[in-house]
Image 1 (cartoon, rainbow, N blue to C red):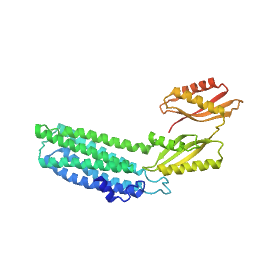
Image 2 (spheres, helix red, strand yellow):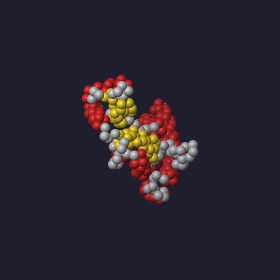
Image 3 (cartoon, helix red, strand yellow):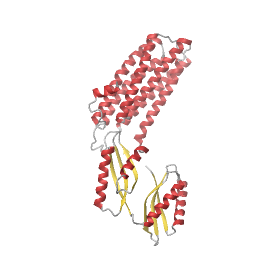
Length: 390
């Protein structure tokens, strides 16, 4: 069904990098969500009034809020796909994250309202009534929410949209809420125990957790998250695959919305290369990265003296020391041997440390590395600049 809807209503549905295609996905998600949730609201509000089940009535208004959520999704995605302009040179993609944040707020509001009414029903229970037809309609509504969850999950992954994935998570919480209402009615039918309030309270806790999870997943890219290890490694490997690239470091990725990534990276090259040669190499890398990953990359050339045997020896010694200090958490780069003011030689390099190192840990580590290097090569004075990896 999902594939049929996508192929029927979205032109060029496979080209998910296009703004108009992403907007079409969002509109399809919103339109389907509105239709399904309006039908569910109307059926549940009638059932809730007939049976007196607070969990059913609360679930009905949850569906009504989902209608508003679908409208917000469409509007937010449309705004997010606006092209870059003078005031927003990186585009408007982060509006999509704000849209998902709005969804999380709505989910949290529904969760707390359901919790309040459910706790009240625990202390002041109302009589329930069981009827086969309303019961079956509730079961069908579970199927409807299951479809919406799967539908929005597929669309969300297709266009890498936090907003649509948030809508999918919302549908899953709705599915559980309705399932709890069905379970409460079944227990009442066969045992006479009224667990409506308890079931509603349990579901409300799950709905609240879902809202918090959506908010967390949305706030991370807004605040500024690092690239995933997989994406980081793939991009580094791609750049380092070029013949004249000796290494890379300081890759920083900035995200301005789904599919809108900008990055900078330091590329180590031989200082034998002319400025023109370095420009041709790095310019080609930037263009190839955009073609391969869709990332706007800016490169910084770090020239290395490949003929400096002493610098090569320091790099070798540093590799040995760091391999003993940690299991891949430490790193170094930009090793240079330069003349010191006192007539000696300085071994200048950057030391990359984990984020959990405090000032004391860092200073102790620097001292250990300095002593080890000077023990192996007394003629040099290590000059260490400490930084965190991005």
